[in-house]
Amino acid sequence: MTAVLLNSAAPWGAGDAVATAGHALAAGADGVGLADSPRLFPDCLVETQRVLAATGAPLAGPCVASLGLRHPATLAGAVRTLEQLHPGRVLTVVGRGESSVRNEGLDLPPLRAYTAALGSLREALGQDGPGLRGRLLGAASGPRTISATAAALGGVLVDAGADTDVVTRAVARAREADAGTTVWLFLRATVTDSEEAAAAAAEPILGSCAMRLVGAPEWNGLDAGQLAAAKQVAGSHDYSRHGTAGARGGAVTPADRWVRDRFLLTGDAATITARLRPLAGLGIGGVVLAGAVAGVQDRLAELVPAVRAGLGAT
Image (tube, rainbow, N blue to C red; front, side, top):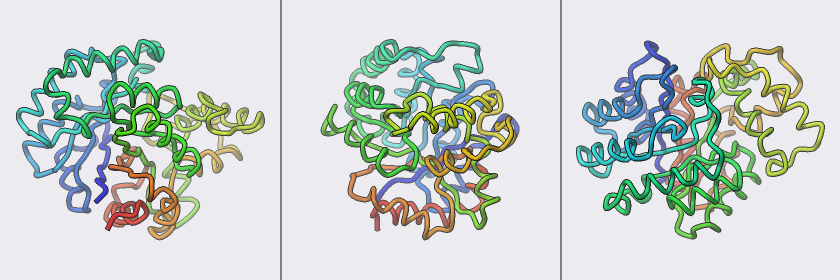
């Protein structure tokens, strides 16, 4: 059965990770991921310990731990400690850490430096590395990062939106680099009953989604007009409020709906299942649901089975 986790992205003082995990488990999910951005969220590694100690969650862990801020050796030490305390229950997802790095006024690590950091992390995990296979993933969205991550870690959390063709190509790229790569999907989805609700759900993350399109226009099949429109949406995103209401700082544009549909699954449960069905044969190992999507927790008990049904799980 496809594992489904909720990524907890409650800002400081806005919620408790243990309570969120309990809610997710009650809704049928397998656990939680904990977002990593020190200006926005409590520490993801400390929160992982709290969740695993206080609940029966099969899986919990940092998602996505920022290698733009954390040294691979110290992150590996924390992961090994958590794994010793809670064997088989720690899911570790790492990444370049876009919003966390931007919020500290730092440059995003170039791919070569990031790939080296992935190798250092794997080396630092030492004898624990093989035992973590399938639970150690690197978040990646573009083709070069997907390939590098699959080769370095043997596990990729594909963050390529909700377009069937793009996701299919992303999974294929990961398996080209390593045929045995574990592939999970980072999925932005929420059950909605109206266009207004769908637009509101997208507001906290719309600009960052557009930024991904801008960063890889050929990979995403954008023409010149679409690229210009995506740049306008991306330019409106306030990364200091990423994942929260009001992050969409600019006026609504005609491109908002188009960008949203490329990255966010909305509608009733049956609609979400139908949009995922073309991906059912890709061998997806798990799904992390974006907790920053407005309203996702309110109808999580409908969303989790819809996602599992769409990916072919029983």
